[in-house]
Image (cartoon, rainbow, N blue to C red; front, side):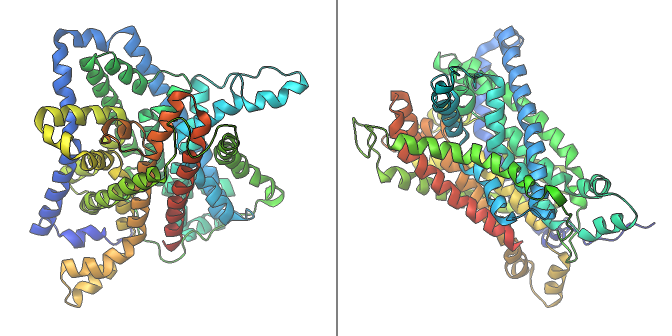
Length: 539
């Protein structure tokens, strides 16, 4: 049986094969990727100050314990996110689940809630003196199992990161050629057999892409493990820096980046077949299955997760809002709408700058016909995996040692650059996926009509990848709005955002003052999620 001659990726036509255009795009992609990761090189400079202490520090019992705990947390959160995200994607795409559009939105909304706010809400609800314990007190129940610790952190991280797997898997299912599944069913393959042998291999790259984002998020998260009292790399690095052990903090940061490299390698093996994807011929995502008597009970899965991940924090924040002493101004903790304006301003700048960086990298990465172009595509993920606190420290050391004028006079651009380093990989992945789905025959038709490569890109390719571009920009905007450590470290003096204000009132113990900025942050983030879901419907 011969292998079908599927059309080549669109970038084969866009860049040419070894021509000047292809080399130019590759050079631009490599240069941009280099600019994203070069500040991290300063970690090596700081580590070098340790000299002969490096082997002893790397193999110390404390370092190994933190390493093992961090890897275990990443593995637990990633596996749990796949177990939650994939079934939800299948339910909302291929089943006859009632109110599928509503449940799709509900399943994606946890991404709009910062995980550290979710952890804060869970502690307030289920902690030793939480609201849930107060409700149970009249029943004679004065104590419930502790929410703190490893499994508490894994649970909170899972319910706020599984949407990455949900959204990428859902996108793969919507692009799936349903005729392949129908053919398997006509050959007497059962529903689950057809899913295992036909659907799962086709959507595996999408699952792997979402799992990669989950793993990198869990590896780099700072706030949630801190709230849940679990010492992982991020907290340990911060504590070493706070103790003026900069060399040790840099060494731990490099160790964390090594773990990131392993995660990227594993994902590349799982998603290695995505270059063999082909364009659908118009029967996308139409195969469905009947849930039967489980049709309505199946709604309990998205409903339960939505209530825990979104309903609980909103309920807690709303309760704080009506506490005595809560308001727009009190004791120097006044909430100002300028905080929201500042947050939106830097998030928009980060989204636009990330698109400028991601377009050439994503376009060339879709072809990925050389090690250099594949390296350029993978480089931004290093920034995404780098904890915000580590990136902020690297940028501080780099600018103070090399260009102190940048730190003193260009605080906002430096902050936006940090966001681009951290989150541009989200735009790269979204653009790359969109380019792979473009039917290259449209590009060939435009070329036969005398259009140049640039004209063809502007008239044909760009309009078709607009949903992916918009999705990438919305993802960068969303994650920038929630970023805490880098914002705290790199913001100019007097520049307050929603997250920095929330952190400030938390440190003073005035939890009620966090209600308004927390709710505003959730609402703005939810609007960006709406953009992502809207663009999905256009694909």
